[in-house]
Every structure is written in C-alpha cells, then in structure tokens.
Length: 590
Image (tube, rainbow, N blue to C red):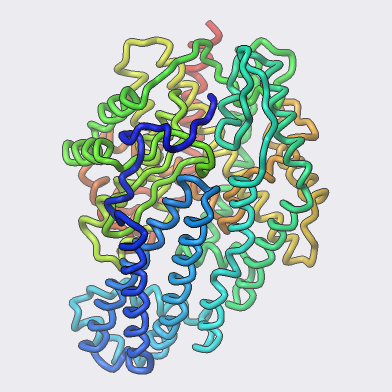
C-alpha cells in the first residue's frame, strides 16, 4: 500500500517510452522540425481548394505534421505523468501543448476554405481521390453553420491553451499539490492518495473505511471554493464556446463535436432514470451480505465477496489473454506481444498521475498507464485499457492518420467488451470459487459504476451547464446541494450523508466536456456486442468495427455489428444487470 519512488520500481514494469524518444535532445530536434512543417502548411492558405493536386499535397503534409506533433505531445505528457512533481516535464508538456495549439491555429483556414468551396470544386477533389477524403470533407462541410470566419477561427485556436486552463489547474492541484492525511492499517501508517482511496474503501475494517472516507472528503473540503471556482470556469468556458459557435447549449455543442445526436444522451438518462429499481436492489443485496443495518457511503465500494484475492500482474495478463480468445488468434497474439513489450506502466509511484488510461499517438505503441494494486479491480482495469489500446492498434493498421481518431463514444465500447469477456471467462472456466465470486461482484459493480453512476455524473454535468447558461454561478454550496440531490435519487436504499455531497470535487471527468455519458453508452453497446461474439461467433465483424477507426460516424460504425445506440440497447444492458443480480442473490444469500 505504501508508495515507492519511481527509481525503485523495476524497469520491466515501466512503459518503454524511450521507443518514442530516447532523449530530450532528440525530442527538441523533432520539435524544431515540427515548427518548420507548420510554417510550410501556412503556404496553402487561400489556395487549398484550387484543385486535386494542391489538396492532396496539403493533406500529405498535414498528416505528416500532425503525426509528428501528436508524438511530441504524447511523449511529453507521458513523461510528465510518470512523476507530476518534475517541473521540467511539466514545462515540456506545456511546450508540446503550445505547439499543438499553433498547428490548430495556423491551419484554422482549412475548415473555412473547405466549407466555402463550390460544389463543383468539392466534387472534383473528392472524386479524384477515389473517395479517400470523402468522410473527412463531409464532416467539415456539415459543420458550416457552426464555423466562424477565418479571423475568429484563428483566435479560437490561439486560445486553446487558455481554454484548457481549468482542467490543467485542477489536474495539477489534485495530483501534485493536494496532500491527504494518513491512516493506520495493520499497525502501519498509510497515506491516503487519489489512487488508493477506493482500494482503502474496500478494506474489511469498517472503522478504517469510515476514517479514510471522512479524512479524504474533509481534506477536499479545505479547498471547496478553489475547486468550485475551477469547475465554474470549466462550465463557463464550454458555455461561451457553444454560444460563439451558435449552438443552443453546451450539450449540443459537445455532442456535435462527437457526431452524436443529443437524443442519445436524453434516451440514456431517461432509460436509467426509469429503471433505478435494479440499482436499489443491488444496494439492498450489499447491505444484507455485509450484515449492516444501514448501507453507508463508506460501505458502497466494499466487495460482497468475502475473501481477499491477490492477483499479480503476470496472472492478470494470462487471465485476460485467455478471456479474449473469442476475439480470434490475431487479436490475442497482438495483445500478448504488446503486454510483453513495454506498452504498460504498471505500478503507482510517488507523484505519478492517478487513474489509468490508454495513450500514445499514431505511429507509436498504444501505451497504457496504470496504478496496479494486485487485485481483481486492477486486473479489470488492465483489460479495460487494453481494449482501448487494441482499438488503436487495429485502427492504425487499417486507417490513415485522418481516420485514426475514433472518438470516446466508440472507444468505451472496445474497452468494456474486454471486461465483459473477462467476466464470462472467470465465471465459466476457472475453478477458484472465490475468484468467481469476485468476478460476479465486479460485474455488478461495473454496471453500478459504469451504467448508473456515470449516467448520474452526466445528469450532474448537464445540470451545472444549464445553471451557468441560466446565469447562475457555481459555488461550492450550490454544487454540494445539486450533487447531494442526485446522490439521494440514485442511492435510495443507502444512507446519503453530508460528506458525499463533495464527491464532485474528486471527479476529473467533469473537466472533459460531456465525456462521462459515453461510459454508460459504451457498456450498453458492449453488453450486446459480447452476446453477438459469444452466441453468434461474430468476432470478425467486431474486428472490422475496431479496424474502421474514425472512417465513419459513430452510429454508422456501430451498424457494422448491428448495434443501435437507443433505448432498447440501454434497457437490454439493464436487463443483463438484473440477470447478474439473480445469480448473485443465489450465490451470496444461500
């Protein structure tokens, strides 16, 4: 539980970021090259749509430059995330961010010129490329009503670094500066961190859980006005951006950038709000299994499985690779090679960014940052992030750079399919009954956390943006009140205390502009896809889905495997939650 310095962790458990750059000097050399390449792109301003040859020349240079900038930024951010206390890599990441903003600013003419081109010029360029740029051009042209004239677009691009300030400040504050108290566990002093907080809330000692819970949220409360101000500025930034681009709301603006209709968001919230019964049933089941009179907020993360299981990183890898066999040999072998060749930064170290993500850039490995704690949750987190990385792997193998960004709406499907397959494998193939109980418990928690809790977050996010758009200021008191009301609605069968009203302070995803709902749509689609893979053997269609990247709109991409992002899909996922609850009631109450 105690956290080591990074130098004390064995190299085999660190990602091989040196495959991207082996020195800062090499990075600086490419940084200068990227600056030169950006300058060359500016030469195309005013003549981009002159003809197919000019357009193709630009697209080739633009792709090469974008790939280089992405690799520079990826390396810098990964090195920063290894130890957020190191100012030199904070500076490097900021420098890379500035370069990315410059690329965006200096090519802001692209959208305007494509949108203002005549239909004849557009058709000529599109046809001459054999449709290669069809989707790229179509996505830009359909945003014409929300694109401002060239001077405004350039200003907006130049403001990229400033507009991301609330998120950057919050991240630095919570990861590098915010220091939590310690608690005594098994006779040793353990410091609470962002990364180990939920793990500590799974400790069998209920008194310890309450102490961790109280100290954690009390510490956040010391900075409630600061965190509220940063979230207010984030929502206000999103609102102003939507206004400038002539959207009716922050929600419409955010979802249009993802090419997802607002109806999907509304259908999800409505489906979950009218089907909270299984969530209440889960809370009551947990209360009975834990043998407590009232389910407290510090009990919510406590597993129903009564035996602690330690799983090494090596064991987790093997379980995952066996679980992924229904996806085919090519998928499994590529995943195995990646896991064995430096994709993953495994263990927590002092100063390391909390949480987990799949990163990298086009042309690099799809790296994975983790804070592996040797438990079932960590194994599932690895499976989840590996799903993202394999999505990137197949996309890069089959798509050019311009179609490499498949968006979070689709990405959260790929990650959750892996989790679903891992659960089915553990329930149906391993002999360890304790591990099966943990797998079933985890699956129930996955539905609670991913489908219901993320939808609750989405409701909160919409409420605070609506409030800002109605002229309100997001104060800590107002945010606590709004969040507490939602928590009481979703946790009707639990004791919702005053401290949990501050939970919004620890959620970084509220700085990602309507990001979280896609976790809930992702698990819903993944539940249906898993059934198609296992019951119908449609792994090849699924690989086609992964390989399509961003070459089509999200809802059309889902059609590859006959999935729709609608209420029926969401309710089928909730029905699956009910079926897992049926199994759990037999397993844990008999």
